[in-house]
Length: 321
Ligand code: SF4
Image (tube, rainbow, N blue to C red; front, side, top):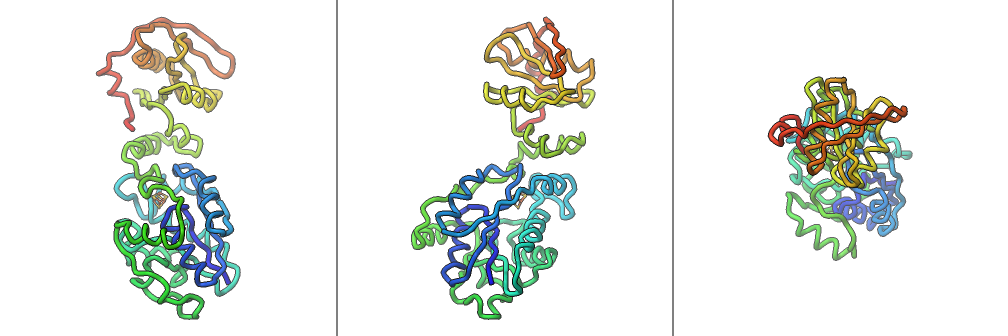
């Protein structure tokens, strides 16, 4: 018999694991990583090691991209499809249940997040995942219905907690009691809750350009949507320039000025009429430079001289972050 814990690495999920482990129940932590998360997997592994609990890491990027394109339960305030995301991770976590007494646990806190952590929605999500009464939320369980592991006496309900809301005081006090010193800041973690990034995701969906590889590009540089529907991405520093150059595909057109530290641009799905505009946008960020080198990964290379676009014109094409 084991508790399978959905483990983000955040303080709440660490505390949830501790609250199960102190009841002498074996745990397996499962971390679902994906391309929209900012949390480093190595940090998550480190937090699991600190707890002394085994950890499985599963990459669900492909599933997440499909969910983001068409969520059955819609989006939250931004492009975050949290209900479908939670259902998907519970369904995947269920695959680790081997014994009929196994159960799932999470670090969810009632009332902490409007979309997924309201009592009735939590119940709905576990039902959709085929896990009715098999999901324990140790931090809030006393405020929720009795689950199967509690009924069977595997878990003592009196040793679970009744925390609710967005405050952090209780969790911080518990961290001291359990000696948990390392955990990430509570805010952030998923780029889909960032309004600026969500704008880029929305634009990419509109132009049918959302794959895992595309999401990696969405995290880099300045993005412009040109009139014919093509996309121009400009690096903002040397590191982004290098990444853009690496990520450019065979059909992409690359642009740069001869200046050492000037932006590199990647023009994707570009038509001939976009090239002139792309060069002029690039020059807006190239400090008075007029020369542009254009090349691709098939070995074509050309040299142009043109004028930068006015700043007020450039912003018209920007997909804002
Ligand atoms: S914030 Fe992101 S990772 Fe978290 S439930 Fe929502 S979509 Fe999933």
